[in-house]
Image 1 (cartoon, rainbow, N blue to C red):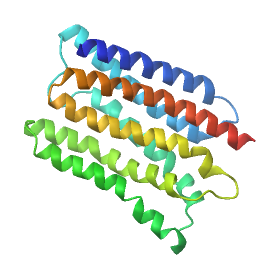
Image 2: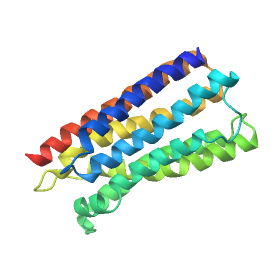
Image 3: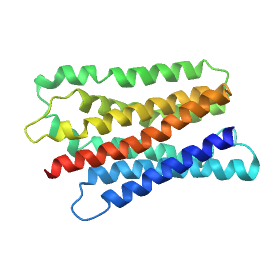
Image 4: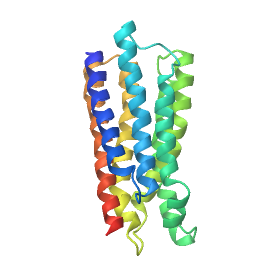
Length: 218
């Protein structure tokens, strides 16, 4: 069942990445959309690794493995998409936006609680360290996803255009965290359900981004 789940996730995520490349890697398309696509591409690579590893060895290695680089890179790209130019464009640093900055801390707080629960789990110390390191870009990225969801739209409509993308990204992030816990417990049915939802959220993120980019053009 685990192998079937990994194959399903891999197929959908790779298809999402290819669709993103076809849609966004062309002249005149905003780098924001390309960064989101690169995030999905990194995640797709991590799933390809898992499928190949299960097919050749029958199981996923315990502890650190190179597949984690794909997932780590995925959330770094999501962070890069929202941090910097996009964040400065939507938040001018004024006191008027203080409440949105504070409310945005809810997301990283929730994922930080997940880290505490992870530390109290039955995983070995090596597994805990690896997964905690993985949570670092997740926690930071979730803050900016939540922030863009909460910030009011500006006159140019940038916030409105990317809110659906960030909603899908936040769902994707949450589902990945849930997947860590259900996989640690060895619940195959839950892994399949959450895994498929993760893959669907990848495709939904690309679709939402494509719709947002069209709004920018208009």
